[in-house]
Amino acid sequence: MHPDVCRRRPRAADHQHRVILALALLSTLPFALFAYNSGFGYDALEYLIIGRSLHDGYSLYDIVPSKSPGIYLFVDALIGLGIDFGHVQLAATISTIYAATILCTFLAVKPHAGTRAAVLASVLTGMCAWFMEINFLQPTGFVYLFGLGGYVQCLRALEPGGRARNWFWCGFWIAIAIQFKSVAAFYGVGALGALLLWSERNRLPSMVALASGALVPTIAIALYFAATGRGADYLQWTFFFPLFEYPANTAFLAKLYTKLLFFFVLFVASTLGSLLPAARRELWRSNPIRVAWLFGALSLFALLKTQASHYFYPAATFLSIATASGLSLVLKRSSEGRRWQLFVSGAVGVSLFAASTALYRPDAVARLVQLRDFGEEVALRDYVVRHVAPSERLIALQASTTVYWLAHRYPNLPLIGMDVQSTRYLELHPGLLAEAIRDARVDCVELTPGNLGLQDVRMLDSPAARAQIETLQREVERDFVKRADSPAGFTFWCRR
Image (cartoon, rainbow, N blue to C red; front, side, top):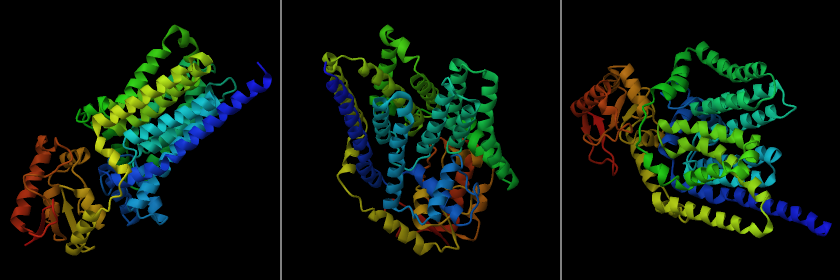
């Protein structure tokens, strides 16, 4: 074959890879529309309210959080820069994070696995965002991005010229990821596993470096909160509650075989294919593949708590890197006559992608061809602002975070929702709701007897929490009057 032909083929392939990467980045535009039409989202409203409360003078943990402090500090920082987190600015923020995950995946994978693997990994990572609730503001995007920094340092540490400082920075970036969500701790377990299994250096100094990198920022942050009287709160809501006290449930189990079908089939098929004799030796000697697989596979343990699709994202992103790197090696060794396999694989992938959409939420496609006006939110906001002065306090139950965020009002208790962390808090603080409802500053309550809309469906199974909710209802019905002009879908009460 003529040498010029050989040179042109890599150039053509590189051009194709750049085009695919550019298209993946351009998908940020429809993703922004998708995020805009998706609305605020339940979890995101909590992050926004607590983040805004920090800007308004509250301290972290004045309101009970559900996550590590990172996401709230991120919101506070952007509000300080003038971002008001209306629907347009929120969608712009979310789509920027989405683009960052695609670009950073490419930059992280390319030096270690090549351009083709980097592009494939970027595309798969982008696909994950569409199906794993990254169209809402979530800390999991940051968990992945900082975890990716740990992954890169882990790969550098495993190279022949790797140094102990690489293990330090691996632990450091994973510790920062934990400050957004504790599930990132599984990345740390993966890094330790990679060190013990595949490191050629003296393992003890490497383990000390890895542990030091993880402990230095964690201890520094813990000492800061301890010095400001919030050390116990930091440990409780960053580590103890999510890792040990969060109640396991299967409420979202169906998502694993509907919404996430395409990814599970892809993951199982690629893993089984990598075990075939012809591929096993080469694939499982590749550090980019086996480290990414270890990070991702261990993160799947988070699904033992709940199967909400955003819990799958920290695992799916690294499994995407492993799958893309393995597929790249297979394609590299495929002859021209077998390139039809690529087209067949692509067709199967698109079919699975479409099946996941059809099985779960086919109506979600409409978010790409419409523009919501959110008029109902304006009506609700105006109603609450009219009846609750900024100096007064409001207690909302059924759509609590929506009410608090839109009206820019706060409750007189440290709970802005009735989710699992609130159940735990009520168990630890008997009499909280009774004391709150008797506060003269509370002139308005949002509550629908018989249809409380509690986010934690098992809250009333807790005797302590149930007693407090029943006391609240009795106090409201005795001391407040139901307003006949409440917005549709809401029931507001004003003090007699």
